[in-house]
Length: 283
Image (cartoon, rainbow, N blue to C red):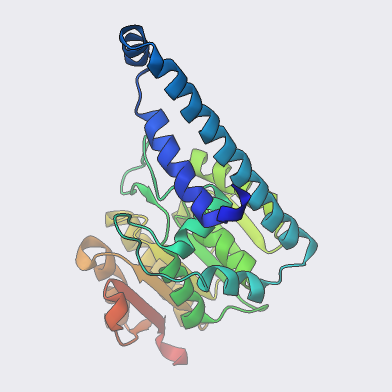
């Protein structure tokens, strides 16, 4: 099982988890009573799922140890996951890079079943290609502070912290998400990573140089955050990487363009839903 690699192990783990999570124990007992041979089949499935889980844990522990000890530098860590590619697998809304990162972090693409605050969104983990694009656009270094606003369970923040020397701060209102992000981050002992449990409107963002938003909120919250970033942009050179719809989200950032705080970079063909904005006074 270890020879499959971390990404392939994660794909199997998700498949087994889907089956186990969608089987009703009471109905399973009824099926076994009608067809006793199913008991052995289910036991084999559970044993196989455990084998996959153990292999995934071991592979993730290897990478975590390399990060903790410095054997895997930020540049090499980034090259490892980016080198797997961003081509979507047939029949799966995933890529090899995403499978590797999500297997390492044990983060599912979509997290449901948790309470959402007003103007908040369902947590969706950032796609690896977007994280790669952010790193290319911003080139964060030792003197930079990156904010992931509405960080969810931490895929973007942890990946950027492990892939660069920048300080990375994830801000999230959902307590369950923050706790999961902190647990994940602790495994890698990244000294440049921090998760803040707070309403983003109450956080001092003035030390930030790059801001990432994957449509984490809309309406009044998006409006307030855009105003705050506009104020920061007037004081220092920043980059805002905002992904999401224009209506009731992107329009608030464009308002800061109209007011002269931010300027909008040319749109790229491959990232039509992304706005890259920079401090107008420093361009």
